Length: 240
Image (cartoon, rainbow, N blue to C red; front, side):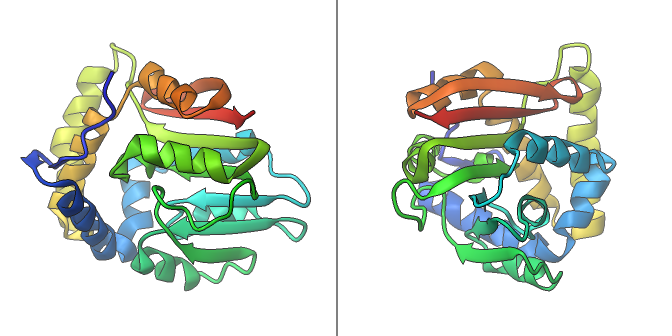
């Protein structure tokens, strides 16, 4: 089984570092309209998916929680509280700046990439990532890094697009290929960014393949929960 290719962007073949640079430009360009586009593309359902992620994370008093690729801070704002620490870790300054302007007093902001997390070994109680793991250039390396920074017993939860059930796939494909790029052109003025989005979803591992990659990285108690008939999925694992 192979991890998703690190040598494509959209349907072009590119070197890994070029892919990384292009993804950075995508998020710099869409930062101001990112949350609006998420609402339009999912009819607001992404908010319910993220609520399910936060419920599964079950943040506790005294914990340090990191939302990786946390962008504008919508998840971290709900993970945080007066008795616990919530950190957005994201490689895009533009996305984090858009989040800072929202005024989220219980959220900290740290620049960092999944493949080289700016945290010491065994210091994080819970790490979440929502719709961001597709964008890492080296998935196996990122999963090992996440495992490294978690405390023993620390929790990792990943919300990501996945494979819908067969009966839903034709309508889902029609919406993906025909509607989403047009929304990207109309609202975000970045159709190529949303063409990349569709390509990255199709190339990403399915539910079972991603669970196997979690286990390969050292996570125990790996499981997944489908949302909206498999359009999205929450994978979870624990550092032993």
